[in-house]
Length: 276
Length: 298
Image 1 (cartoon, helix red, strand yellow):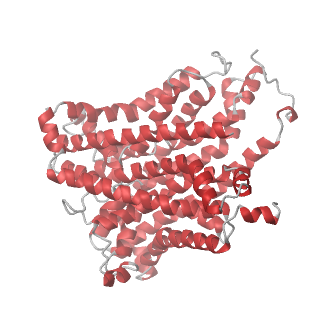
Image 2: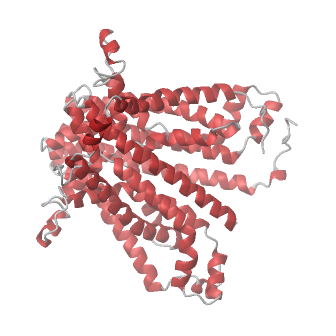
């Protein structure tokens, strides 16, 4: 590949600055979490991160994030498929609209969704007579997290769907496969890594999400209290070690997910190479 | 372009096509478009005067100002970092490059609340250098520097993430040619690299700015919520909403929603330019280029 010595200047300067800035802004501050937790004794730490209210918050956070990511996979696939394969009026508008959750501040999304889905909101008033309560319940959290996560799934799937070669599908059709068989046996396996990556990205984002959730969640301990909110609550009571211990648990989980995403992308790129 | 017959066997039946489009559009309209419309309707629900009054209020003003200041500091910082990082990563080979790229992505994986927490652990009154700061009368958390720091953290990867893949795809031939023709490093960067990555850079800045102005979780933790002093727009919205001042909350929210709309439009335009430029690059066969010495460093 490329030679160890490049004639381009600025390697030391740019790499040095990159590492310095990265350390000052990200690495050193993040390490504070580990050092602070290291000051706690193991039994204290364990008792804290497994206390009933905390465990309930894990269940709410992970449960709602999982459901939201699954909903996003299903509808995200339909949206990405329609945007890449079909022609319809306003396609460019809808394509741009997909990015709205990236662009709209989470606090705005939070107050909007909770007003929309509250008992006398535009949507909530039609759900209420059917006994469906969304705002101030875990269902509301799922709605907010679905909103936040959608672009991750659509934007990971779109390029893969665009790059699929038509010949492969034609070959499947020539060999007598029905359209459904072609989708299940040819298209789906090809887009599976991207779908899983999108799922993990949406899931990872949902777990840490705070702004859009707290408005719609109702934030009842044991029922609709998410872990990030519990961290904030502990901070407000000046329980710094408690907040840090919870942060560490979430951080470790985020790192595992980041690792998974990198692994999935590596898998996807290897697949792409083999197919080419 | 395809003959009709073969197209049919690799397409879904008409009813399925229409129902898939229907489901997709219904989902996008109800989940994304409806909330967007709702913001503006609520903001103007009590008339234009109430709307303007909510924006003229001194606390709202100071929130707007603080949001603009924060973005004006955080974005350039991350822009310079993004350029430096992508120059190092896309132009040179070194050990641990993949690891460095993952580290740059790290802030995306961390919950916004934790981003705020780490600065409290460092600079808070019980933090590592908190006591020292107190002795010297420097305030970082629960003050503007903390808000800026938290914003820099959450928007850290945006520019670098856009530039690295773009610069890797473009390769370093043109810069090497410039250097071997006697250009200085700075000239090469200014005249060759920057024009080449211009659109990618703008794209990253747009995304970075949108997040910087809209960040809530991280800023909320370090802000201290002092009205008129350390409230950014998203925090101001929260306070108004919790005080049941719906119209005022949505009035401020509508400004951020406008920002989101502008971001989306700019993003679409820049994406279109980027695609055009990359397509133009692909069309030129390598030997069709003007005679540039491709192996200058041989």
